[in-house]
Image (cartoon, rainbow, N blue to C red; front, side, top):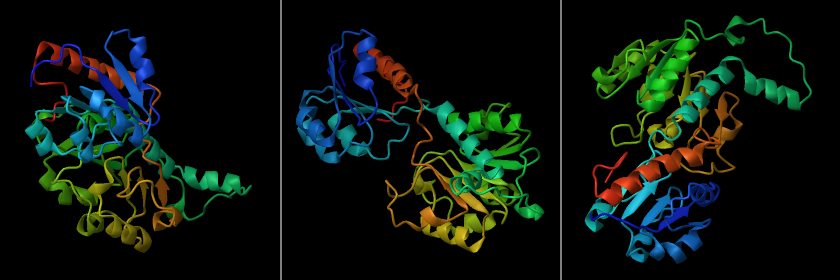
Length: 322
């Protein structure tokens, strides 16, 4: 792909104020924002660069003869047709790292919420009910010191979560494709992914922070869930596709595991009739683990670095996928 000296950038998102924040940087680069899929379909032909996530549809390519670069707004990129982008000479970069702090802090908050029974406290507050102390030790609030956290995917998010967990005196185990590249101050033990089955029975919390790939699709299946302690919790701040949802539903209903905190599902928005809504041992957040007031600025830092590399004709791009 040739360099793009003066591209026109299209921002496509229903909520993020990307064009406004971009304008404040006074780059002089032409740009515009669309707020709906229909508006995107009408104007994508004007764009050399597309900044997008959930609005993406494969048919947009037929309306985008000028398109040369796609900057994903999120760290995930499984929604894009990689082979077709390669065929058309369109580069793609992810926003890996854009919400590392937000997601790792969200995962830690979910662990704390489950440990301290905060969802139950909120439910009781809404009912104006003052719950007494719990005599059953196994059902009482707990503390994290000495508990074991297993992090599946020790990338940027997983590594920061490991540091947060260690600050709470937790024992941290992790899987990583190349354990030799793990920083020593992250997990106490780092193992290759094929050791997952051996690690699951040791964990009080299993946190998924891995990308969705063919290797991680439905990684937490019936066998993996059955290998967890009955007292353990699953924390999913990765893609919903990393979990076998019917198997998880059975495990939660049958007491195979104690509970789960889930930020991402197969179908979103989660349908109103989904049985997950009514499970008392489930804490749901609506795909907000990565949300932060700094999201736009973090993303624009990545975008501008890539636009400069494109201008100079340099490769690879930051977080380049295609």
